[in-house]
Length: 209
Image (cartoon, rainbow, N blue to C red):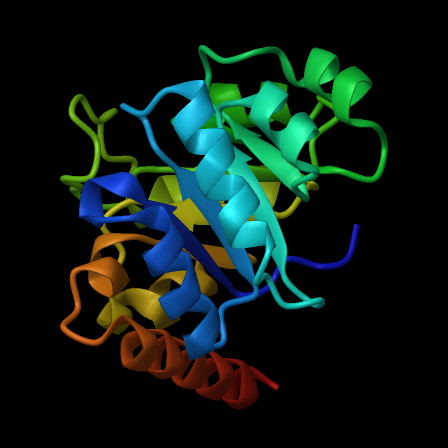
């Protein structure tokens, strides 16, 4: 798998039409977009993913939230699984070796277990308070994020309530990528906000060199 981009974006249906959101995210320079529609049917999600794939840039990846079947049928780049979703080993058998598979974890124990699984990255969070989930898991904070990043060998994607001003601290904790929902999707201009995120991430990376 090619390295994940620093910015991991999510076209979440709770903020509007995922198809339009994905277009705005791509226009801003995002190159990894997870399509998330928790309340939609499989048919609706499949239609949305198909439409998004029709304009996805060649160098970008589409990951489907939860639904391995939709990812397979649509020919998406991969799937992101929660703790209660299909086991990652089964997802790997279905999607094959070249698909991107990520898994959500909410503490060190879950992250350590995930590190043994056939997944490409481990999402850890929520780092801060988040309102994008109806029943969010307890906040883990930056110290726990740093412990997870130190103790697992797979790429870690930090997620949950992260805003632009948190970038340096989150990357310093060891996260390879930052997943962002509200700070981008709730912005008046999503495309401009993505561009700003990428600028800041690049600047932080240059300072660290």
